[in-house]
Length: 429
Image (tube, rainbow, N blue to C red; front, side, top):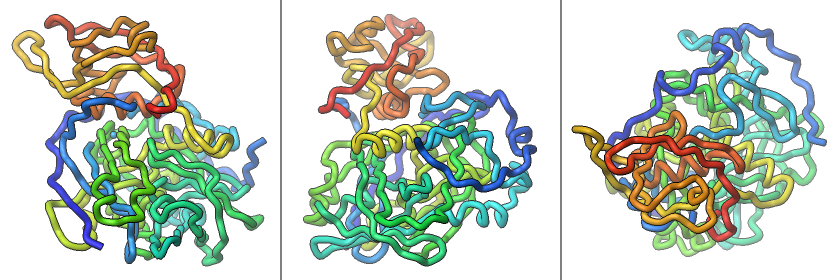
C-alpha cells in the first residue's frame, strides 16, 4: 500500500543545555550498582491548528495500515528532573540503573541490549482481511504491554493480537485500554508466563540534547533489532492525523480522525516502520520514550525508511497514560482552555513566534489565570513555544493539576502567568 509523504518542517528552537538540569548528575546516577531483577507487582479539541508541516508515521512492514501525518514534542510533569518516577506498579524506578557501566561518552551498548531486549516484544495484529506489526514494552509481571494506539487500531474492532516475547514464545493478548489522543495503548497477555521481565522505567525530564539513546523494536518485521543515536531535539511538536490514511485504506477509518499533538523526543537512532510502540532507552538501560513515528522526505511509493529523524513519546507522559489505561481502560488529559493559532508579536526590536490565543473558555484554568484573547504564549516553564502545535503538545504532556508558568507577550511586553491545569472535557481529550 502506498504511503503519502510530505516535506520536513522548518527548524524550531529546542531545549538544550539551558533546559531542566537533573539534581542528581547522570554520572552519579550511573555509579549505583545494578539491582537484582525482581518481579514487579502493582497492588483539545484545539481549534484552528495551523500545520507547520506534514511528515509520515509508519507502523509496520507488509500489509500495513498505520499511515499517519505528522509535524514537530514536552516536559511531562510525571517526575521532576533528577527525581524518581513511578512505574505502573507504583514503584520508584528513575534511580534504578540496569547498566552501571554506562557513560554518556562511551555507552556500553552490548550491556544495554542484554538488559533491555527481554522487555521488548513484537506485536502482530490481524482482522478484517488486513494486518500489521509493531512493537511494545513489558510494564509488569501481570502481562501489561505498552504500545502505540495505531499499532492495535488499524484493523477495526475485535482484532486478533499476538505478542511474541524476546525468547520467541507467542501469546494471545487483548486490549486493556487505548487512548487515541496520545497514540498510546496497553494490551494484556491472556496467559502471561511467570518469568516476564518488566522494563526499567526512567524519566524523560532530565534528558538533554546530545544524550546517547538506543531504539529497540521490530522494524520491518525484524524482531529484536537495536539502533543507536542521540537525542537530537526535545519538545518537538509532532502532529499526527489519520486523515490521509483514511483515503488510502478503508480499515483506517477505525483510527482517530482528529489530530494528535505530542511534545516528542526527536532522535537520530534509526526508527523504521514496525518500531512503533517500541522502547527508546538511555545508556543506563532505562526507558525514556516510546517510539511512535518517523519523518520522511517528499513523495514516494511504498513505505519510507529511516532518514535519521524519529520521534518518541516521553516516558513521563507515557507511563502516566498507561497507569490510567490499566486501571480504567481510558485516560484523562490536562486542560488549559484556550483556542490557539500560530502567531507573532513584537518584543522590542525583535519578532517572537508563538501560540496566539484566539479565545479563552469561560471557567477554564486559562480564564482563572488571566489569559486573554490576543496574548502570545512563547514558553511553558523551560520549554519554548513556537506554534499552536507546540503549546498543545506541551500542555498535553503534563499531568492534571500541574502548575505551569506561561511566558506571555501582551502589549509588547513579556510577562509570566501562572496556571493550574484542569481536566480536559471528554470531547477535548
